[in-house]
Length: 234
Image (cartoon, rainbow, N blue to C red):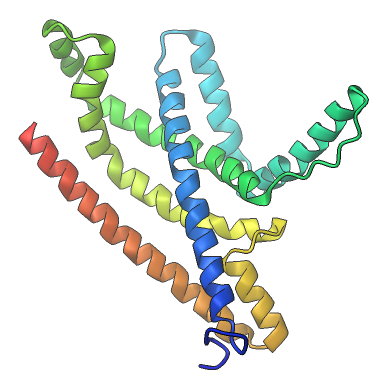
């Protein structure tokens, strides 16, 4: 077992380590995309413009209703087909292939943002309306009120929900193995087939995901303490 998990030509440690880096990189790349899109959708849901509210509700309904794997297939295969057909319409032969990392980031980011928008929306509703009125009374613009008054409270309120979504995102990265991205699941799966030691390598994958979840929990606990101190100072 130690030889199989060792680093070097005789073991699979290098491949598993690279798969772990790909998994973490994909999750970290998806997180800001999902947060920004989720925040924008939450703003759209409480907009005074009816069309913006309708578009935001349709967005969340679609991506919360579709299975994550199906969303991934639609982005990865659908985007390639769309590019090829557009190229054919303009008379260009296109052999464009969508990058699996980018497809995974877009698909998981869309799903993450649809759930994050509900977390942000709940946080917005938890902030008393008097906070907005107080900022206006002090002569702050709408953007200044949002940045200086609302956002610090919003982060503190939304953090528990966002931490849960991060752990879900971290686990959902396993889906990208089906489109060829060499993440933890794909690398351990190859090792299991080659060595016929499925229990060993999939057990290692379980331990890696659990370790990442534990580290994430510590990180979010530290962020929550920092946000609490900032709120108290404010």
